[in-house]
Length: 257
Length: 79
View 1 (tube, rainbow over the protein chains, first blue to last red):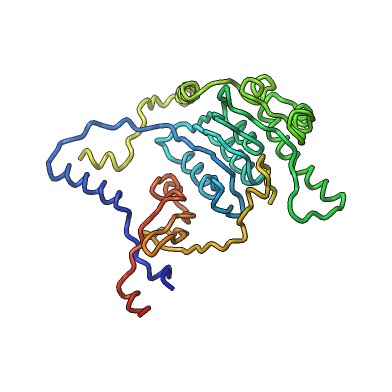
View 2 (view 1 turned 180 degrees about the horizontal axis):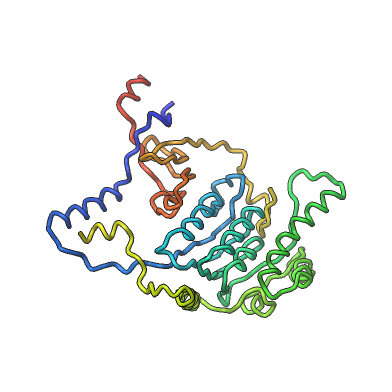
């Protein structure tokens, strides 16, 4: 066995060492200070490919890992230098429970969040998109709404379908609670025929998603950041802390000494 | 597990049966699950930590390659 955990000695990546050398050079040259870098107060989270749940998907899938995203959201909530979250979505769906978990986490953040759907925000991406305080969709981006399906071995008893219905209701409930669309309208979109080839469901392109009330506005990057900065500003005013300059990260502070 | 996706389930799960080898290693006191890709390199699969700031560190993001160095004692063990 070559990769025994205890025996392995892992060295930090070369980049880490390069950065260290750069800091040492500054110290050695006796520079008083470097121009302070504007600390970024916005955290960008890109949700791409499949949203991975309990099973590690085969490597041909691009995936968003639930177990990495959840603690990252905790860090966003806890880190005082992060004031807002921008969620960029281009995803084909994925695990229902992982998706709903991410959506609930974003929804219960105390910091402002804005989502932007680019390309596609299909299936389980919808709850994630609507969990943010404000949602944008690119004019060419699409949202596919379709029913949940069971795959693999299915026991053909009525309870199976009741269970599936229950799972579907979780998604419908979350989306309808956080948007202006009613649960009935969403269900109607989910089971509409004639829109998808050989399938039931609806494809909403850009403006359509706004007109049914799922998304707030058609827009792009600058719109999303503008709204996020506005929300951050509003939150600051509400708190009345007057903290207009984001705190410097600890390592940058060391650099100035 | 229920997948709610627009992709056909066969496409998503294709190759699921193939065995992948993951190992847990320690990096400066931090536990990582990695997938070795060669004798020296491995790809991070998962970070195991209770410190949320570790998850914000781009150097520890899943999919990132890290270099593993074998200690000489290990080689002598094998030989």
